[in-house]
Each structure stands twice: as structure tokens, then as C-alpha cells.
Image (cartoon, rainbow, N blue to C red; front, top):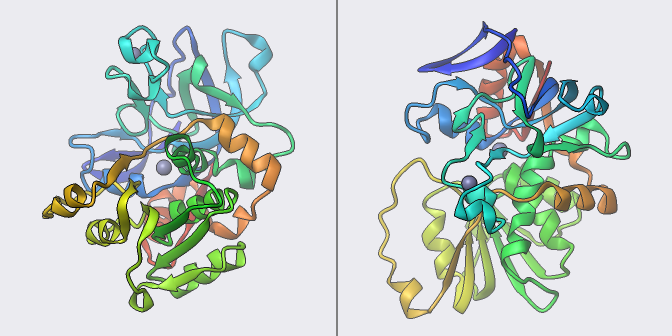
Length: 317
Ligand SMILES: [Zn+2]
Ligand SMILES: [Zn+2]
């Protein structure tokens, strides 16, 4: 089968089709989305990763132990936990120390014609969610994770740093809480799109004057935003760090101590939250799709996704 393989460099190659182990489900991939994390892996975020990238996808079940699954339109949660350790028993599977992560750590991903995943990670996509929305399931669940971790209501002022793909999804999710949301970014066109999605308070970074927000979410992916985020969190406020940085950070953390700021690291979320959100609000996420490329042109797709005006770039299999 054809797959996009990272092995020092990226290339589309013919590799052996995954052999489905018992307890796993083999999915014929239809669409997959390129994410910031994929670029970071190419840039060395996961040392020594080699294999098939891709963790945002949807497809159709081709093989499964349970025949009733075959033909179903599905996606999958990206963490494959061991199911027996302390973390797994406490319902914290996403933190299982023995987990593999689809296309990220120890498990081949979905930029391929087929992907094999554990049965328990497979999520059926309801019929009323079209492919163009379902492809955002994983990053939307990650955006929603913030609300699982931090209680945000209409009484709160929230600053969101970033105007990229994940920041847009976070903005849409936060908006539903009724909070006073301010988005600050660097790209006029992306901020305009966020405005068109119904979040009027968007500002270019250069025009931003420091404030004292109850909650600050850093989703810009830029290490320089870390200090800005802390500086804008009110004393006893909450700073949610959504970005992972390839680079190291040189930062004196005293303001976090002095202002008694709660720092919350935030990663992946649960798919049922994303499904409910898509069904209830039907957000206009199609506007975020910049381009679609066939899998054979996946390397070109990565180049397109890297350009500063790009939002979601999809691969069609
Ligand atoms: Zn992702
Ligand atoms: Zn475990």
C-alpha cells in the first residue's frame, strides 16, 4: 500500500499493508488532516520517530473481529493505552505510560491507504456529521479538553493567544461558554476568519495592550508567547498551555510564583465531546480547509501546510 513515511526525510512509498492483530480494527483511510504536531515530528519533536505519520483521519472499517463494524464510517482516538496499569484503572488512559500514540509514538499513523488500531479506540461517526466536519474531530476534542480541565463560565474574561488551526477550534469551543473572549494573533487573514466564525474580539498582536485575564490560553505554538501569557494572567488566575514547543524556553518563572498562577498543561481530549459539539453547533469548519491533495502528493501537501497562510490541509486517499 501507499503511505507517507518519515525516515529521516518524508517520502511517499509502497510499504506492506498492516496486518490486523486480534482485537484491532483495520480501517481503509478516506481522508486525513495534516496538523502542527506532524510538522513538529518532522522537525524532531519526537526523537528518532520513524514510520507512518498521521493522527487526524476518517475512513471505513475493512476488517474487524466484530463483523457488524465492517463498512462503518469511523475515526479513532489517538492514544492506545495498555488497559491494565494504575493510570488506565483510574480512567486516565491518555496518560498510560505504556501507551502508543497513532502516528506519533510507537504506532504507524493514518497517512496511508490502511491503518490498524485497537478496537477500543475506534469511534463511529454519526451520519449527520459530514466528512468535512468529522476530519476535525481529534483537534476539536483537544480544544474541548480545556473545558474538562478548567471551569469557564460567562463570568470569566479569557485571552486566547494564537490564530492557527487549533486556536480557531479553541475559540469556537470557548465561545459557547459565554465568556468574554479576546483572541490575539499575528495573521490578519486568519483573525478575519475567526471574526467571521462569530468571535468579534480579535486583535493583531501589535495592537494588543496587556490585560489581567481570569484565564489565558496559549495556543500560538510560539515560545515567545509563554511570557506574554503569564504577564496577562491575573493573580490567582489560570494559564492554560496548549502549545508544545520544539525549542527550549529561557524564562524566569518568578511571576508564576508571585502571582500564584495556576499553570495547566492541556493535550488531547475525548471524542464524544467533539461529536456533541459538532452536532449541536454545526460550526463552519469547512472554511478552515485550505487545500486537499491526493496521498501520492503528500510531500507537496506538507509544504503547502507549512506556508503561513495555510490552515487545514487534507490528504485524500
Ligand atoms: Zn493533531
Ligand atoms: Zn496503561
